[in-house]
Amino acid sequence: QSALTQPRSVSGSPGQSVTISCTGTSSDVGGYNYVSWYQQHPGKAPKLMIYDVNKRPSGVPDRFSGSKSGNTASLTISGLQTEDEADYYCCSYAGTYIWVFGEGTKLTVL
Amino acid sequence: EVQLLESGGGLVQPGGSLRLSCAASGFTFSNYAMSWVRQAPGKGLEWVSAIGGGGGSIHYADSVKGRFTISRDNSKNTLCLQMNSLRAEDTAVYYCAKTLYGGVDYWGQGTLVTVSS
Picture (cartoon, each protein chain N blue to C red):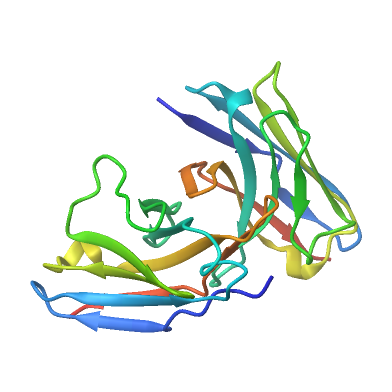
């Protein structure tokens, strides 16, 4: 149950696009189409942004999109806005009611 | 509206025990798996344990296996986490989470557990 690998930090200017990667193994990310992404602002509970690799819950802007290739999943945020500055975590199902989170990525909007 | 309300956090000495509860409302509780996810101060999210809707499927992270016990009472829409033999590294905010295979769609506000002498 090792944590999924994410970059520690990414940054971008308002209006630009950024992509956050999430690398696991064939036992988690590569083995299931059950990758999710969460946004967390300081002192707040996480918020679901993407589920099932590329689906957006109601209310999440279409600026947020997800994809997966092999053992690596990605979250892309286009048209960056200042309110997107937050920590982002990926998560993957790993079988038999086990989930594993990524290490987290701090997004800075310059 | 889905609501998850945790309670039971607090300060406990190393080696002590604590029982967390989560009161759920706004959805058919027995139809969904539930999880506990924790976040140590300044650190990332860590999945702790999950239980199936009927209570028959249960799994734990290696870090808590043998010390923590997850349970649910579908008649009371309540999820619990019994934590024994607590260690300093168990200090964290503990979140109750409505869980789908594809992700956690609802989170509670969290309850802080501090293990310290």
